[in-house]
Structure formats: C-alpha cells, structure tokens
Image 1 (cartoon, rainbow, N blue to C red):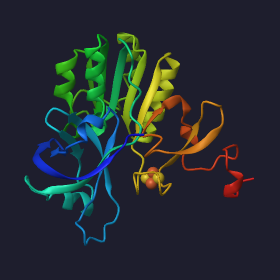
Image 2 (image 1 turned 135 degrees about the vertical axis):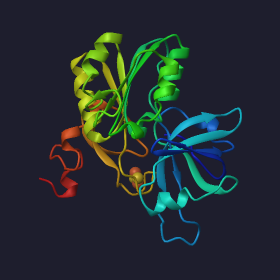
Image 3 (image 1 turned 180 degrees about the vertical axis):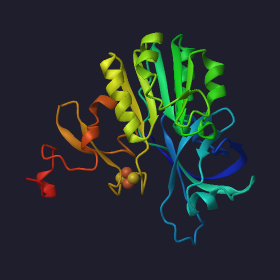
Length: 283
Ligand code: FES
C-alpha cells in the first residue's frame, strides 16, 4: 500500500476532455509517491457538508518535478458536481496516493493495455515506463460512445498498436473492448494485459488473456466508502498465494490485482470455502 498524505491541494487547471474533466492539482510531497494504479480520495462539499464520504479518482499523471498530480473526474452526482465547482486557484482536500499499484516489470516486456472509458487514466504512466525500458506496448481503448473514450491521442503518440472500440460504433470497431482482445494479444505477442474498467470487462479480459497465455493485471473500479481500509465496503474474494480464498479490500490490497486470483464469479456472494466464511454465518 502507498503511504498517503492528506493535504490541501491547489487546483491549477481544469480541462474538459470529452465526457470528462481533467483536474491538475499542486500536491507537494504526493507526486513522488505515486505509482501507476494508485488512486486519490477527495473530500466533497466543504467542512460543514453532510457528504462525509470522500470520492475516489484514478491518478492519471504525477510529475514530481513540479509537484503536480492530475485526476480524471466524471460528474456523477452532487458530490462530483460540487467538486467540479472548485475554481482554478481554489483548494481541495486530497488524500493520496492510495492503494496498491500495478506490479512494475523489471525489464523489457510486451504489454497490452485495455480500458473502458476513463479506465485508461491510470494505465498510461505504466505503458510509458514499459516503453522507456525498451519494451513494446499496445492499447485497446473502448467506451460506450466516442465522447466517452479517454486518451486515444496519448496512446497513438506512444505506439502504432492502438485499437478503438465503441458500443454504438461512433468511433473505431463497434463492440466491446474485449472483442478484438485475443487477436491483439497474438498480434503483438503480449506477455501481460493490464486493464481497468467495469468488473465484467476485467473478468472477460482475464479469461481471454489467460487462454492466450498472458498474465492479467486488473485495476478494479470497486465502490469505496472510506478508501483507507476501515469500512470493508470494497471487498473482493481473492485466492491468496497460499491457495486460500479471502475477502481482501480493494482500497488497500488493490485496486490492482492479479486478475487470475480474483474469484470474479463469486463477487457479491460469500463463498462457503472462503477463509472466515463460518464467522460470517455461512456453513
Ligand atoms: Fe473502506 Fe475499502 S473503501 S475498506
């Protein structure tokens, strides 16, 4: 897990990117701690607000040289609406970096990055790292519509191996991001697939990657109430290295997981063979 800081972060810029807002924050001490796959939690509504729960966002970029981090935010309700009202020059209450990041390869490798919507936000820093280490990368960027794609130009600046999919066919291939996945893994010889998006997509990505002989590393978009491991609202059933299944917290043990260890089909249930299931009243 990262060692987070809680600071007042100044809003330096807010930029509309398709359906999203990219928010650049001055965050002294935070950027140098960020690894690809970390997330941030922002307080919403001010000190007197009834909205006690922080909102979690992927950290898209972190630049230690200028002490900045950028987050990608989509307006989903009152909390994010109030957050996005913060003007340039204002401050937000930031806790970051949070979570367990993607494992970073030690040497050159070939990796495919698969995302739905702004799920691509935490993937670019890792893709750039792999490319800088002499590796090769490819992308499949999917979304419901063209407006909901994120980072297509950035992906194309990094590699020629970029596929775009949209559910409605408004850009690229019509269909889900998993549609061209098996062919794309073969085409670039991907050793690993890094993905971020809805659980169903991550499950499908893991199934295809595993069938094609590639590792699957997934960043889950699990609902998080506290973001720091205290509330257990974000648990997933995961098989440990000892072969025993346990509930683990997405906010501290994840959000990045070895996809082959997540019991995707048991999410939302209490499997009877889970360590501790008896204590939960399952027999
Ligand atoms: Fe509270 Fe994970 S969000 S334990």
